[in-house]
Image 1 (tube, rainbow, N blue to C red):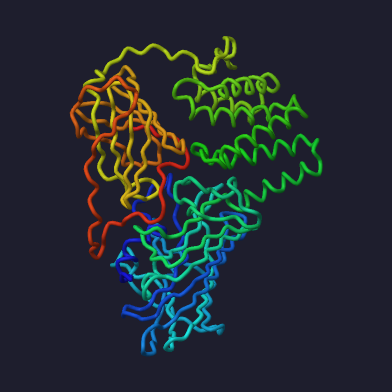
Image 2 (image 1 turned 120 degrees about the vertical axis):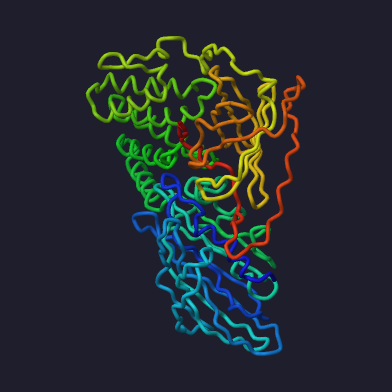
Length: 553
């Protein structure tokens, strides 16, 4: 089994962001951690472990009580006495050092004391942080049970939270870990709407393979060596903050008791909407699609019961407009027209209502051609013409030669807003097809395909999507074989998405199939020094939320 020093130096990414982006990445609380032996080689094996992360509604991002039970066995021929330990604090990415709390440690069912010891920070070796250290004896050939319990705070931004548990510290014991059962317990049954299962929310992605049983999600692993390049990696749990989902359950109960309460239907619709639209973009996974439809259904029921309520019409318009805004690269979607119709109705019902006017102004910013300022009110050009799902795109005089633009472009190594490292390789073809490859440092690769358009002003825009339909739109200025990011998802952080041409332009076959381009081989992971650059721990997807773009000037 590899020595733990390497593992710890490379895999505390969950607790220590590489670069801070205050508008995207939240400060991250320390994760739960398997105990590790001291620095000497050991013949003690971690035969089994069961970790229960019980999430509690604390009125904000949630708190988890972690109970981790380990069965340890000395496989050597001499008794071992040692100090086992695990970190109880870590840099949150902003120079603060929050700690896990309420720690108790039991050996063979008896609570034992622990010492607060100071060791170098796992990543920043020149900084010291507190660890919990406890003395333990392992007789020859006997099982020793160890239980470690403590509390963790959730990390994230409303309405989402995340918890983490690092398995890799267990790699310091002899051989593989025999088995592991990881249990996430919620105050209610988990489902794809309240646990983000197949996408990244910006600072975490729930580990795949969990099985739902009642109020729990369970993961089981056998005979494994945890590590950033191994099939079993560290655990991540991304979910709706418990206080937000409890509000959904409360409103669901209200409409069950009184199905003709229009206000309860409206509050339920708003609760779904707030989870579907977390502030920047919207959820694109299966659970997000369900939330969108549930919100639509609830708004429709609300307005069927109370058709003259301007604020609920405006709230419905807000949902439709925010979703369709990110889907309107090739022109407004049917929901864009419906959003304009709803806000138009709201303005007719209550032209002076402050909330209605606020939402109307936001929608006019999203669709300036479909909703224009008209004196003290608004005009709706799209509503007085025959609606079509995709109105004709205005004629643009091309400014770029497709043959000259076509080729392969590559970025530098980027530190994304979720603090993971990646490199982008973009292939543009003269038939206006596009392929974007995102290569993560842990070897994972995400391929997104789509098209690019000439904006007629010396810039071009790509619109691509991966196999999970996570969508990306980036506007580039093109100059001297360089693509300079102009407008791009905030997921990429302040570093931007600039690229340099690697391959000269070549003629493209008329087939619409995007040919595979050869790309430079990704370098093998380097041996870490005392302060190495970190590989990416845990699974990664490119974008779990279609993120709000930012303008680069």
